[in-house]
Amino acid sequence: MFYGYNGRILRVDLSSKAVTVEEPDELFYRRYLGGAGFVSYFLVKEVVPRVDPLGPENKLIFAVGPLTGIPVSGSSRSCIGAKSPLSNGYGKSEAGGFWPAEFKHAGYDAIVIEGKAQSPVYLWIKDGEVNIRDASHLWGMLTKETEETIRGELGDKGIRLASIGPGGENMVRFACIMSGLKSAAGRGGMGAVMGSKNLKAIAVRGTKPPQVAQPERFKEFRKWVLEDEPRWRSLHEFGNGPAPQMVGGIPSGNVPIHNFRDGEFPEMSQITADAIKDTIRIGMEGCFGCVVRCKKLVKVDEPYTVDPAYGGPEYETLAALGSNCGVSDLKALAKANEICNANSLDTISAGVTISFAMECFENGLLTKKDTDGIELKFGNAEAMLKVLELIVKREGIGALLAEGSKRAAAKIGKGAERFAIQVKGVEAAMHDPRAKAGIGLGYAVNPHGADHGVNLHDTMVAFEPFLNSMKPLGILETLPVDDLSPSKVSIFKHQMLLNRLLADTLSICHFLPFGPDRYAEMMRAVTGWNTGVVELLKASERVLTLARVFNMREGFTAADDNLPERFFHPHATGPASKKEPFDRQKFEKAKGNFYNSMGWDRKTGIPTQEKLEELDISWAGV
Image 1 (cartoon, rainbow, N blue to C red):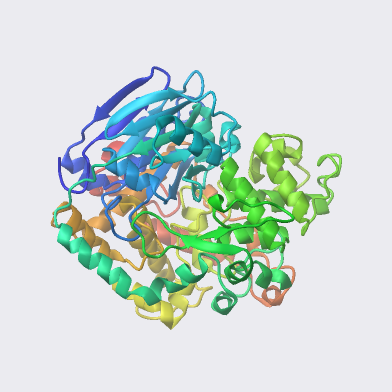
Image 2: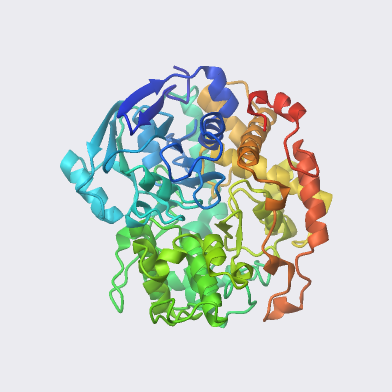
């Protein structure tokens, strides 16, 4: 055993009910670190190319990192990965809450789940002991009912769950996995993979946190976070979702409106975090060991009943199901958030897929006959809620939309593809490349689709107040949000690798004011390794390159690193309509520059053999 890890990876074959434990050596841990590193390694090493993402041959990996479960803010994160049923490529997503820390304390660093159970089951893991238990009585339950029932039958209210609701059971392609009731591993359909394996939940209880090399050092880190309160105070005050006083710092045209078509939504102030605080919010909660407490609790009694146990809508939810669908009814958005968390649906893909359907409806590509009479128009909150319920059940129009916007567009035909705002089949997050050029590059080259997490938000380098956090990366001067010069590409690469992907590999929250230097200090303190920023950068390059290899083996090419045509045209309305659209030539040049900087072929994006050897992953060639 070595510091910071349990040194144990659990493997569960649901087909044979075999449970085994592997104990990799320290070199494995140092090379792949944890979280996204473990996910990338196991997917490339063990998932055979071209398998059905919803078949038993796919593997579902839950992984935590060296910082998971240590009592310091932001440390309770997990990465969940599989071949994505949305993209047919690399899939990963992160979640917080209490499950990751509890799982780490239960004695493992990752679970690799294989095969498919003959009937519904759940895993029960307590201090290293593993049981596969019948879940037939849980199938069909919402996530809260599932949590309450399992805790009751195991006699422990402190049990933490990663679970799916009916959306995952019915293999909605953008189903998520809920960590508790408020945190979602949302992107890429990991909940559908879990449902395809007849796995309802993973219940964990642990009392044995791993040892750390310098425990006293973490007291200093905790103190540092507390003293840096101005950096995170707004998250505690409002949660995630800009308050009106913060909207001025967001470029015009960034917030998606009417399926990313329009540039103005006068009702936006009605669905901000500030509006939530003033109307339906009843409190704030947080994850294990975190002082920030950024998770909203909302309560609504009429015209909908909304259970505070499911938290409240964050920015991505408010925009995806709100402004992007033209909905300004805050209570309806709180209800939509509850539906998604209770049934395990990704709010981003759900909202963008519904907004896609709304634009199809308004253009006559879908009719009331297709929607069973639902007036599926922008701004119709009742229609949005009804369609969410139909998606969960795969009934009526919901059966089509449960496939995601790319597959739905292909089935509708008649040019519907132009309304599907997705990359590699994964719906775009709530940031518009016409307002943030760097994030557009990130959407295109991310192996798991249009993701906003492992990405550059251009506002971080466009305004002086944000720039201080970027200076350790050598970024000393501001660059405009629409810049795509080689300098911006370099900034994007280093932000992607040294902040975002590294955080997902160490399994720590993006919202905390850490950075590369602090990550290196924390790694030295937890593991005792003589490590630094250069080694951590190499580890992140290894993780991203493995993900790239996975997609190349699945048949992806540089042509798949593209953006929806809509982003190359101006907004239809609002001040943003007068701005220049995203420039395709600049985009293609920036893409080539990124490939080149990563050691991938400038034209094809295929990692070179020399780069694979440099990263010690020559075994992973395309």
